[in-house]
Length: 302
Picture 1 (cartoon, rainbow, N blue to C red):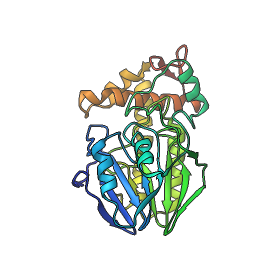
Picture 2 (cartoon, rainbow, N blue to C red; picture 1 turned 90 degrees about the vertical axis):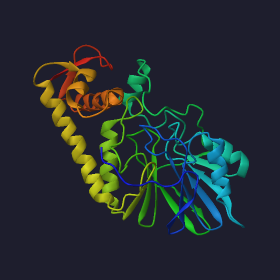
Picture 3 (cartoon, rainbow, N blue to C red; picture 1 turned 135 degrees about the vertical axis):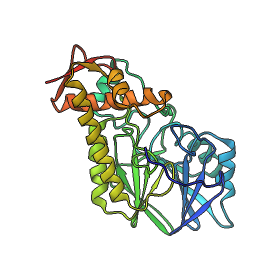
Picture 4 (cartoon, one colour; picture 1 turned 90 degrees about the horizontal axis):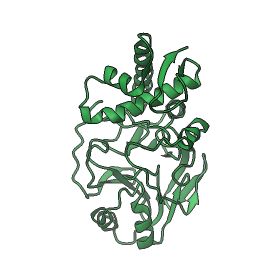
């Protein structure tokens, strides 16, 4: 992990320039850093990006950030983790705005992750919002417009199957796909590492100047951060392969051997990251499970 020095006040709208404001939600945790960033875009017709957790205080902060003549007209959700999407329904009822997202929780899963879910592998990580249902589903490349803004939806599965980023000019609202304070969690069956890496490379090709992340400070050198993230994952894969050269092992055993510099409470998340790598390596015919592919399977090199 890397750290940033971003310490904004909770519930206060910060002006980031270019018509963008950011409000920090009151939900700090080891998985959410200081809390979820909610973004407001527009001078009169306001888009809210990632309304955040179902918090009355955060709802009040969002509504309180509206000035005279401002109205929320769109609520956009990057993905349906419990720290990003649950407040969307309440905010929509308060404002009449339409909720937009890629699809409900579970949408966008890869075939192998659908198979894993069918075998009983449950989500483990930031928590899925099971009731999330956008009023309208966005496809890759769709545009959403307000009086003085235009957003383009980019389907970026990996962290979650229904993950979207939204680009506007030289900026990208990147949700949890890219963060400056940590590498993103990829937790099967809703996270898929192969998809994650492909989405990283797609975002790298955009040449954006700034990423506004779901947690932590804005990323002022997104290309360099994506290069780091891709190299980090490639390095983790190499570590897993090196450990498997010693003999077959399961994800938990590999995580304990590799993640020696994190608190023990973070090992379950690390184990899910390793499992994501093992599934990806299986898809690439570099490793195979001994028996059925599952979270507890032992894997060996091919």
